[in-house]
Image 1 (spheres, rainbow, N blue to C red):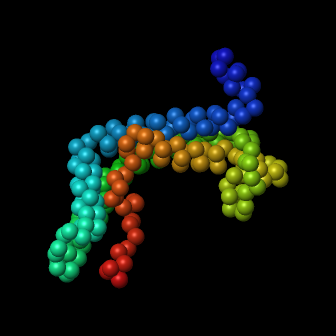
Image 2 (tube, one colour):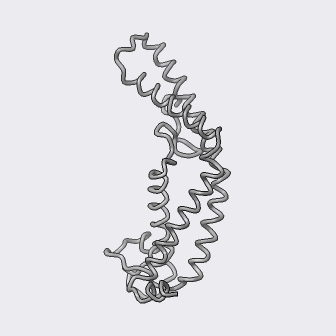
Image 3 (spheres, helix red, strand yellow):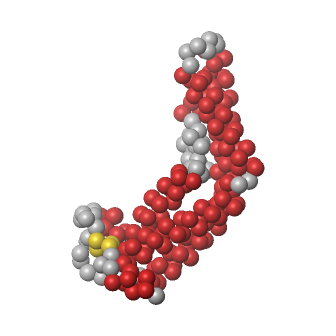
Length: 191
């Protein structure tokens, strides 16, 4: 009770509340991901195969000591790249199931925060945003002050930055050779 009255007396209490809830949500989402993904043996084996393939590909591309015929070397590099892409795709599909649970948690928290801070200014931006950013940052707020920041914008920024950094801190960031997502960019060699 004393903490609640202390927070409400602060100038930036609404903004700090949104940041705190975003931090707690990130921790809950990473705990869910750990239970559903990161502690399983299949995730660990996929991750190690991606790491091995990425290291092998890097050494094949950069090491001049490997004296193989040019055509043979490109075939081997293509094979390793294909293996890396397949493993990355499998890893993305494996993460997909926990993504649905995490998305549900994020939607519930966003709905709760939206009902608590509807029409309230939770922060002041130190700059005057342009077009699209202003529409996002001023969403649901009355008035013409474009430096007013709504809960949705602050929560969005906090969720992205806190969760990404928490994943890096906990060692859950994707392997360095993994492609980004289910739909990687097309290979320029095949066009």
